[in-house]
Length: 113
Length: 111
Image (cartoon, rainbow over all chains, first blue to last red):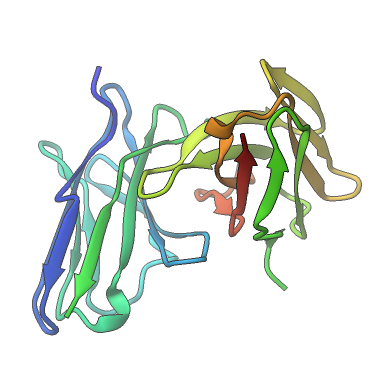
């Protein structure tokens, strides 16, 4: 019973390139959340999705960032035209129900050079 | 003022000590309270999940919630070096879609 799978674990992008982060939730989990973590800071909510629907994207920057959770396949967090300030650890989490704790993946560490 | 305040530490204790970790919050709508443990370079792991006020015990871990004071605590008894990690408090309101995390407290348990 695999947990939440995120890939890649590490991603290096040059300024201006696109970063694509993938997340496969735990089996049976239909709620997916993306969080960003900067050094010495807590987890900052970005977006909450269910299959084919964005439920809450209030934490996601309006420009350059987008997320999807298609009917088939993993959830994708896309960052276009990356800048140095996008360097962070991006964590995906899933849950079976909205009112329960999350299971987190191991994260994708994005470095923009 | 942040919605959730947590002392970043670091907190250093000898093996076998009782550890007390705390968070305060400002949003009275929070009803669900969680503690996560995060080892370096890993994702957070859910330790405790409680609803509303009261205590919950699981092995060496006890979570307390005092909604009247907007204050939650995690106690670790007989602490072990393997407990050395960052502990994140987290909370949410049912009508909200997101969980808000504290900044985390770094704990070091010395053998």
